[in-house]
Image (cartoon, rainbow, N blue to C red):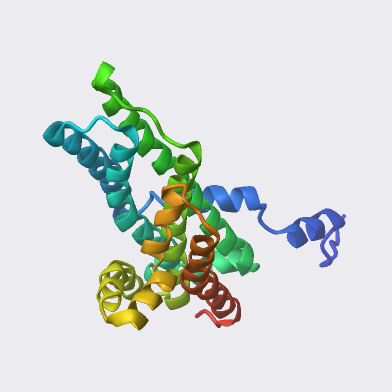
Length: 257
């Protein structure tokens, strides 16, 4: 007897197709992508090793015993490399020409981009906590000389600052979809704003309100006055929110070949 099957998908198949890839699975895949290429793996290793080296080096050379000062030393490396991590997270699909495959498997591009952002932010929080742990261990070596006093809000602001640095890389990477260009902007912008701040009153005002590296100082120091909060919000809007929104629209509307 010949069995004739209908070309119409069953209800369970249709339901599965409409649901698409679960977001949890997307998040796991995007998190794995942070470490499954040579460049990202090297960058992650450099993040950890350089943070450790800076903290230990400052403690040994200067005899620094203040926990939060050592944590700030680790932030020097993180502030430079975390934006690069954000850029590579967003531009990897286009650099390796896998965007078509990714968006074919999950046509809802917004979910993929959201998973990329969340995976990078989660990795940033983990790296920040590891850096704080290293600073704590190095501080503990000094025993009775160690100075642990720190405002809990300053610790939260420290981590939030690292997240904002990653957010800048994510936003520029998504807007430009070009890793070299976005990385150059991330690395050069602090020097550029330093130059602008020396161009008289107007330049100093612009840098005060638009230099994300400067406006996050109040956040890290737990000294967030209304003016400082407005300056931080303005710089975050200019460097993270608007580029991220424009990049989302670009990717959602672009034909991928």
